[in-house]
Image (tube, rainbow, N blue to C red):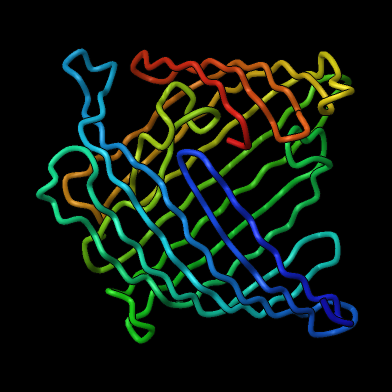
Length: 295
């Protein structure tokens, strides 16, 4: 867009979770080491609230909520060449949650979460889908401040990392993610979600909600074929997984630890990874998955 290499980036995500974002990325130096970024984003998603049935092994949705997260940001950043980047700056964010199924007398949640945020991304994988070598680390910190208009002050952090290594024809991918929120007041809603394919396989997508989550997964896969016309490969794999949730800031929420595993057939297609999988979790929870995109 100009002599310093400015870019206008736009993204659209469809499905159960919808996302529309726009960003103006402006390098400040010819080397592009420093940059400014101005962006806006809106996310829409549907969340189910479940209750455990008397058999203790299954759960059933009893309510459904629709959430809209609207944010605008202005970041100063540093790019580390092909390694990654660091950003820091103000964030203006509003969250609206309203019931769509269930007790419609509940008025919902309106929360202003504006404040400061900082994040770093380092990505050295050889593929964003079925990586056979390399690592990726992403970490974010968000501090909501009443001085920026936030409904209350709180801190939130997130960490996500993966490391892949191949032994002959077999690849091991180790993943760790965790996040937490801390506030002196009761949380307006549990922010973090867990559950679904490769995120505690056997549970429904984002079935668990909490103020703190953790997930550890070891995934193994083997390339068994090629997709010369539509992609790069066909893979067979599986994973043991363990996750935990806790909600000290949310009344009447309990801590949980869940063990899970999966087996899958994966296709690395031109439009993204496609999975046909099966998962089983603690309490004899079982699910089959037909999944397009990154879990």
